[in-house]
Image 1 (cartoon, rainbow, N blue to C red):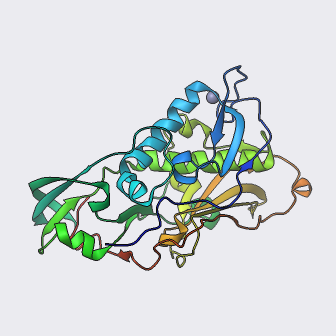
Image 2 (cartoon, rainbow, N blue to C red):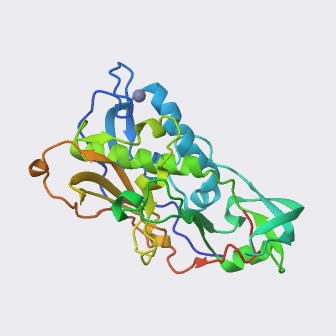
Image 3 (cartoon, helix red, strand yellow):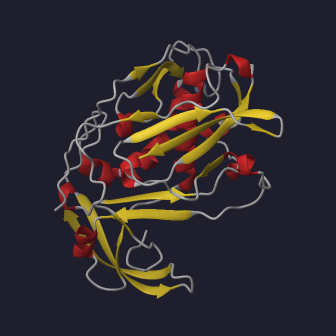
Length: 316
Ligand SMILES: [Zn+2]
């Protein structure tokens, strides 16, 4: 059993920005604007709060995307580490869905499987594992054709002995979590857009992602959204975030770089939120120092190992 100092206790003082007074996503003025947790409360508590910043309609969209990540993709993981929960009851059990792989593709990915068992376990008995996506750098930054596709990888880190309990043999597997890439991307865009607005002010950039955040399709997603291809080493902190204003082909853009779960060695995402509309001379700097969200107790850095998601040992 891994010893985890749960619940996670954030020691970085909460940062509360001045109220915006209109919806940062659709621009609406309304009497019912709610405060935005720039990084969802369930991931970062009250670390970064932007008051009076979202209308109820936009909130529905951002909440849906965040729920897909917080209440599905990362739910057992968050529960295990005791992440803040917003009043909803903490789960008392999780289902471990065991399976047997029946057919593998040539590249090692899973083609077919049979369900073998479903075990109801306490949250502490659910294997500690973390799953996320790894992309390539945003096309705009590296000058890639805006319509080009990219190679998307899954990153899975887990506690081997805990997982092995439910995956005793080759070709055995467990179903980890439903993955919803669009919701994941939408959550990244929402954090980046809200953070850039909080730091630089409403109207400081021409928003490229606001419609996507509000549920529309983003046809050239990889032009604007991406991650480092080489993932930096784990760092003893919860999350980090910063903005920068690089100039590409004579245009200056606002880019937010975000690393959720730095302690696991998760990827750092880079999101181009739009072209800067403020004079560059007004910016306090072109490259903000990294803003870190730190925790009190050490987090289980070395206890999660990377798994080859194509080995057939685990399935999604
Ligand atoms: Zn709105």
